[in-house]
Each structure stands twice: as structure tokens, then as C-alpha cells.
Length: 182
Image (cartoon, rainbow, N blue to C red; front, side, top):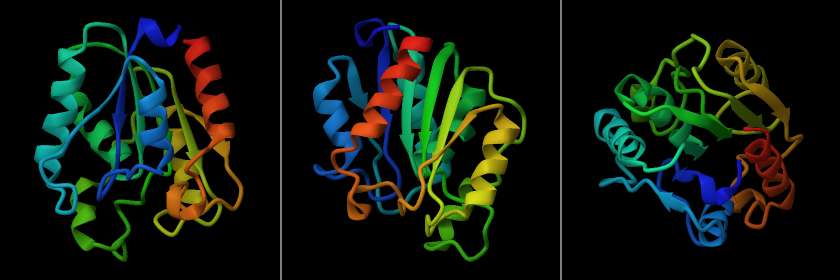
């Protein structure tokens, strides 16, 4: 699949992805990419976030490819029962452990727990060994339950701009390969 053949949905996490974040950079470079907007980026409500994701998927005109980061991953997975269109694939980066009672802010737990069934579409989960929002073992377990290809990003923090992942050429190359294989 090529970029022009897909509706690429960028699904940021808690507080959105700023201009230096790799998601914002990709959105500006990928001609068919658009961001799934949330009414409240800093006070996420599961029902609102999942409704926004489902609406974007259901309004797509081409096959849907999702690019989600952090809480965006949880919003996508929790929105799946509302999808009326088939998703061609999902690229999940740094899923948070929304079942962890120590997660901050605590209201992020309302997005959990994750469903444990295999996903109905191809997916990749990329996780860091030192992500403060999810242990590597939990991320690997989530990916296994979903039937996702799991990629070890090494010691990469939360894979966001604060961790040095504004320009993320390795991620871009991995996404290009994923898209080509769909």
C-alpha cells in the first residue's frame, strides 16, 4: 500500500503531540494523514476519545491506517467495537499500561484494561525498555495478546519529543515498510 491509497489517521495521546513530536512531523509530510482531534487533550474521557476515533475511522474514504502514540493506542483499541469500516493496519507506539494503579494521572486508568483478543488487522507495537508509562514486559505481553509484531526500541523513554524523538528516521522507515507490506 502507498500513502495515497490510505487514510492515515494520526492518533496522539494525553496532551496531544506538539509541533516537534514525530507524529506532527509525519502528519505534515504524509499527504493523506489527518489528526484525530479530541475536545479535551488534558482531561481525557474514554467515551469521548473513543467516539472521536470511531468517527474518524467510519468517515474515511480509503483504507484506514492508524498511527497511534501512548494514550492514543488505548483510545484506538477501546474504540474498535464502534468501527464500521475495516482498518487496514495500525502502527502503535509506546502504549501506556492503563491497568497500572500507579499510572499518573490516575484517570488514564479509565482507558483500561486492554482487550486481550487478537486484533482484526495487522499491527505493530513499538516499545521502549525504559518507558515511564509502561514496562517493557507489559508492552510485550500486550503485543503478544493482540498478535502484533513487537519491536524493541531499546532505551528510548516514551518515544516522544521530550525523549528526543522529534525527527525519528528509524520510526519513519519502519512505518514505510509496514505500509508497503499491507
